[in-house]
Image 1 (cartoon, each protein chain N blue to C red):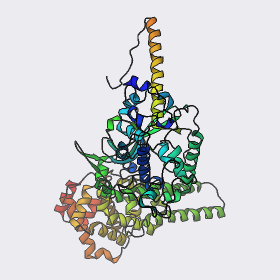
Image 2: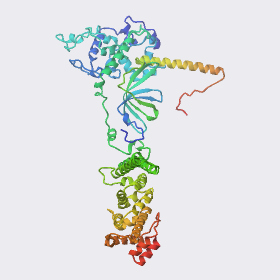
Image 3: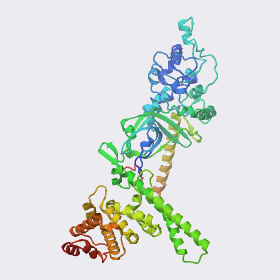
Image 4: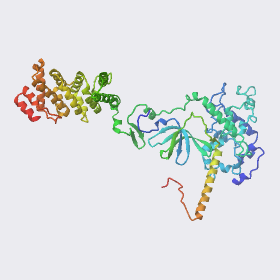
Length: 133
Length: 495
């Protein structure tokens, strides 16, 4: 029951399993245990899930305290829903390797692109770190 | 160091691919150590895999931890043993370099990842063919755990074993298998589906086994209703209330009266006004030519509607005694009543007048929008139909409120446009009756009658009077009957 109608609150999300996306791109899954007015979050039995293509791998992390400003989005996970995704869980090494390959491929294409642009006399500055403004 | 690794020869035993230091690893000592460790692997651990077997095996001395990847405990006992660690084919050339986290693999500096990678059981530890029946050799006479059969005995593949051997964090087969040709993948798929099915089955039971709830004082505070929600933040207290109006959140104790008000308004709008419109409509259609039967029916229907509205207004709440008052306290209610009054029978209409007169102070105080004058024309008509004794009764109502003295009642009335005009209307009618020459009831000679008029007149002469809606012309004549010249003169100047 919402004791303060017209407002939104995370208080009803306490003790439920959540997925949170952070600004650095990490995905965490855990039980939300505590909140405050800045949306700082405390997660319990946290798992960091790395997704590459259709594969994913979990790294158990224990207890996480997330500073509110770093949260992009947060959502409750339905524990009872049968898992019917096409995502395949793989081992940590495999997913990290996949991730490394993905990063590598991305960098390769970026490098080629930059070279092509350079040849044409164009230089587009990269918005590398979005936090620097 | 990296070069050293790439020069390492392909070992005869594919499973033994590991650190350079472990070149001499595969010996009896290793096997025995592995066997000992195997005892510690309690695959039937409740935490990891659910229900225990029928005969619980005693946990070995150090106390086993679950075999889940999240277990940090696996690292310490493993340290005395250089395990053949799984390294996929494509990583063969990199080996320890990868594990030391050079290049892009900074994840492998991550202790959590290291724990999983290094803490995994190897195929050798899980392979029942290799592991010796350790306990049997120690005691000689009978095994340490009589209930457990020899680990070498081929056993049916339970889901738990499947998870260990083929799950996501299971040991990988020897590097000769390329990642693209993974024979265990269908089994992984199978395990996933099986787990999902089991989860569905256990759905009823699982609801009981919810994760342990963390009740902090902060959470238990929310069980109590708080119109303003205070959060103790690091920078101070933060108060949260509704976004409509903070005033409303703070004045939460008035919630009931507001709720009641809304109920009344809803009733007026949804039910009663529709009926009233019907009544007014039927009044208009009366002028058209109708047959006698039709006219009678119409009249009956109108009367029923009128009575319906009247009774609805009279008894809003069965427990509260105040008749009509809740409706008179809202503007819409006043308007409704003003329009209804002409249709009411005389005694019902008089009842309304009595209610208004008796509760005049309350009504005036609640009338923030100054909507009471809307009632005046209809009430004026009602007053016009009163007999003298009825009039006196109404005046008595006006001057005798529950909590206020006559003086207070009258002074309040004088301060209010509606109140004063109503008073004037009553007095005017009284005068009209007196001057009509019609023989009046014996009450005219009563002390009470004169007393009231005297009081009223006296009040009027003393108080400051507001501008009335209507000033009857015959008031002074009335006062002349009862009062002396001086008072009359005073009144005249006041009015």
